[in-house]
Image: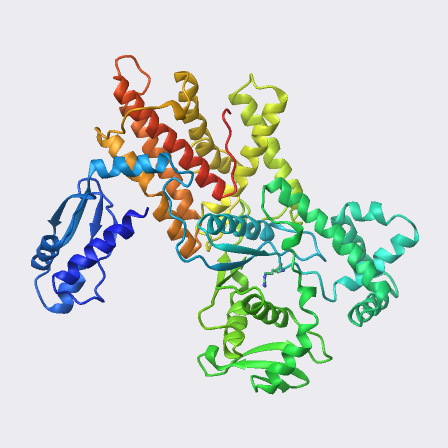
Length: 578
Ligand code: ARG
């Protein structure tokens, strides 16, 4: 159920009945201030301007035509022509009852499900996974969960960087280690392995030539070399999987579709673009000149798809990827979750793919860009010594820090319970700190802020959940045992009811716009509405009528379920106690 959509449909119908042209939208949104109804329709002003009439009079005509049905209690005109819409209490209570008996909480599944390909995480296997991949992994996974919940067919694509010249030095180093029989040990810590290979490449006489030789062999498909490469890739993927497990991320090995998978298609693709006249040879390289993206002087934006000497590039693979996803995976929508600094690259790839007719026009290409994770010093996040932060270490530190907090808050927990809760709190804090920021912005990574039990944080929401659940323990009741009707007598109950009913429209918004912070903001507001309700409306206190108690407990249960469902869509776990 989507209140906003239902009201939009009603007001739109009234506008048409009032003789307003169909293109004039009703502009319905939740009311920003108390006392102005629950929702507002603000479309009368723009429509009046267009029709050259008085906006208040036009608003009155719309209200006259409005079919209020069971949903709308009253519609009032305010200011220059706002229409304030008050929802009926009975209708709200009915919606909540429907949510109670529905495992989807009265959130309708998408009527026209799409196939959505989401490219996320996508680390480069010739390097250690770094914090940039953390953001992509967290944001991408939240979007995948949410779109799946909405009923879409989601295809996860872990576009791992598993190919390229950097593998030369790694393979040369690996073959030496294998000869000495200590490859297993060396690969246990990839960070060290990469570093050793790089040092040898930079310093050791002759090693660079051997590395280059390996690149040539790899590219020409030398079986021995490919076997070595495969060995390295397998181990690298296992390292990523450890991170995914720890992070509670849904990516599986079967979601890996690395750059190397596109190798056979790259020469075909380049030939095709040359034939179509979309790419041209330029100083030995093959280039697509994009007039569509010309600069101020009118110079087209150049996108190299084959280097002089024949090598292919990141851009070539991305073009092949778009074509594969649209035509083989039959995507309706392709999301690529990657750093905002890759905007130009992706815009070029999208423009070239359209120009080459690689995908039906109806398929959308979306770059879900995100900003940089910064340290306290306002510079990109690094270790104290300026190195890249190992993700595994970062996550371990989160859990360790959470453990201290959890032990302080609840000293009676046994060790196993404490460890389990700390894992959920620590990982939840890292993920939520990322997801709750507008993803396109940079943000400062701050342990104390993300682990705080106050404010818009994971621990705050997880704690709110445990508090709601504890009421049922105190009442000695299970939600399934509740009887009676939901009544919304006080303003706090009413405000909470409306918040609960907005879950569906928030999910629809995030599914459409791909900004998870909107869901975070909603869950935070829901918790705040719950706190206000809890202050004002006693649930288990003596003197509360049985009828009120039952009704309020039912609201509590819906809050708990909405919080846990919402957090789960963000990839964050809840617990009964903390
Ligand atoms: N491996 C790339 C990187 O680490 C990210 C890949 C994103 N996906 C894509 N189709 N370009 O920067």
